[in-house]
Image (cartoon, rainbow, N blue to C red):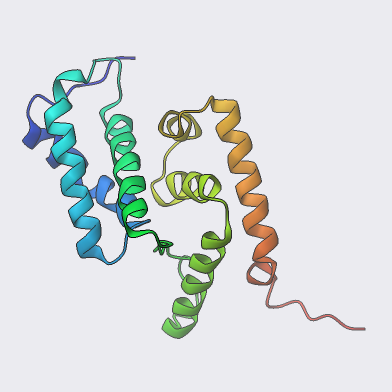
Length: 172
């Protein structure tokens, strides 16, 4: 597969800014700090644009740069990141319930090992395929799939109360 290589830094940024910001802000808070890291990502990308080959997916290449910049920023901070991933729509429209569930999802993700957390964020917050997750995490597709399975299982186990059907009532 050959990809359409962006010809200019402006074209690269216009095409992928939102996706890179979404990825970075999944790990870096507040948004202003995430935007700073995104600027570093595009600065590094602009300087290395000549290294991008036709066979390289520009999106995966950029998110690989973003991954390294996020790791660097977190090392400098030396604290755990908050991961702003929405739980999804709450059918009742209850904003308080939605905020509580989002906080619970963030807490559950924070309890996962970093590689599992990152794999889930790439797959579900960024909508990437397992193959793309594998490229970014520098693993084989089978290893990335296995990592995602372990991550989903850990997430589900830690958050079993979140996944319980509220309609079920245990009768003893």
